[in-house]
Image (cartoon, rainbow, N blue to C red; front, side, top):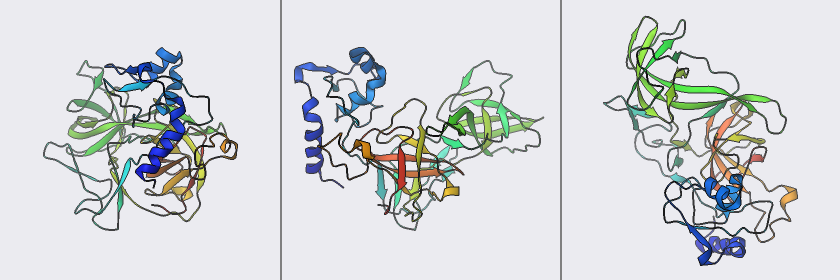
Length: 346
């Protein structure tokens, strides 16, 4: 891990040449995004990662605040956009009670966060909420489908009731928890071009309130996105909040399939999805590294390229894919980039 002095030195080497004079900066206004600012000043919204790389004081590109300075002078073109290392998953010692990834139910039926594992060494605890989405190799079997008949609203969120049309043979009981999802987006492998499964967006979690005549009414107790008619319902998937540290000795190698729907390149704290799962030996808690490829070694002579471009920790594993959170990214990564399991997990 770099010291603060080393990190500052890297920042000076990589970014000093590109910083504009103080009088050539823009101050963030309410409603601004890096996407919008890149379009306004550089005529290309897709260059927002370059704008982010130019402004190392912005730790998370999805959170900029009114009054923040944005430096607009573009650096010379380069193969990669290097950023300061930043740990977003924090190693934490064991705490009493709870199970990794589990939640208990509060008196109102909503979730109550459980602590890290009570034993077994340190865990990676997610510093803030991460995506619960995943890539499934096949369409998800449905317990039912959201079909609201008595309500005129189009979308529903936390605290509201939805009606569920149960699938044939499905039996749910009051108090049972289920998860709402959407899985209509196919995933294509970025290298082979072959189908790789379906992107499953977890919309939220519900508690069944009543069941009658093949239909159920459920209360939305936690929502990540609006729930609309046609959304699927599957057995409850507890949100992952902590994973135990694990070392992989299998030497798993693969590529990044994609990230979350609203971006095409990824940096620190972003969720990525890779084309390997438990059938290939991946487990939650294993660390992945994105290596520097041979063609990039001469592009950034001022930066140590002997270290990986990025490191991520696996937080959820399916049969043929896994979700991981980027805990350190010195450069943006993108679909098709190669990854390896770290020889020694931290």
